[in-house]
Image 1 (cartoon, each protein chain N blue to C red):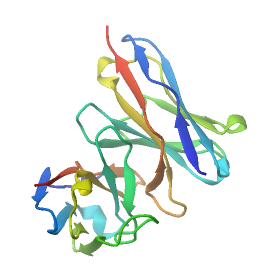
Image 2 (cartoon, rainbow over the protein chains, first blue to last red; image 1 turned 90 degrees about the horizontal axis):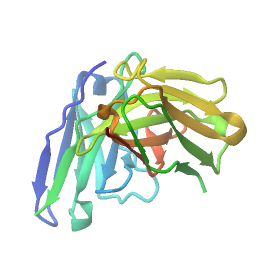
Image 3 (cartoon, each protein chain N blue to C red; image 1 turned 45 degrees about the horizontal axis):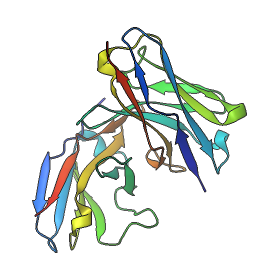
Length: 107
Length: 119
């Protein structure tokens, strides 16, 4: 299986844009998914198929892919966006892999 | 409403066995895979494995193969995660989750079951 690499932390001020990258060989061939997890809660899918939003997820959350990196972008960051974010993909052996997670801090 | 309801928190001793459950409702149980994810205290998410309820075909992460068993009981639309001999390192939150139809990503999650293994 392969690894998905995320920065441990990202910090932004309210109203700014947060960008959380997820890098790995597998993201070039497979769809990537993103989850948000707030303290004491189960994860919630916020993006699928690299850039599609599930219903109920605001348009200010978007995603794009470039080479070995998939990036989730949160525009106009709000205090409520503060959470841990995880990317996830599937390797060639159908083993699902999560990135290590990124803690988004709203300053 | 699609729901995954998990069994309650457990406190066990090393060497004991355990089975936790995940009751699915609001959809056709045999039409979706169902998986398990571990989260150790203060750590990230780890995919443990997934099972197709239709025929109990289970796939495991190499990290968990042989360490746990995933099963289903179709008659009660419930998935199980089982240990035969717990270790202190099994202390974690365990989530069951259902993939989004047609995709290899989970869009429905249970609330989690906290397992504590302590002498």
